[in-house]
Length: 69
Image (cartoon, rainbow, N blue to C red; front, side):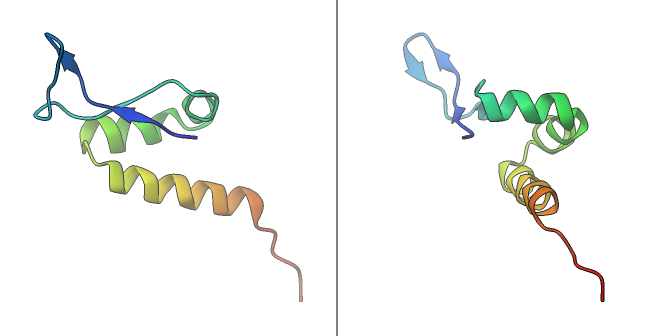
């Protein structure tokens, strides 16, 4: 599971700040196996949709096996 949150500034949610990826077992696994993915898509581009697209591709690649003809 992936969870995101906005920063809490003075007891108020600050929607102007970027969403932060919260620590979950899956997020920690991604951090270990694909640290550049988090850095590029969430850090450089600050794009959750691009990050989720890359996570989907990563999951697809790791579960899909192609048979030989």
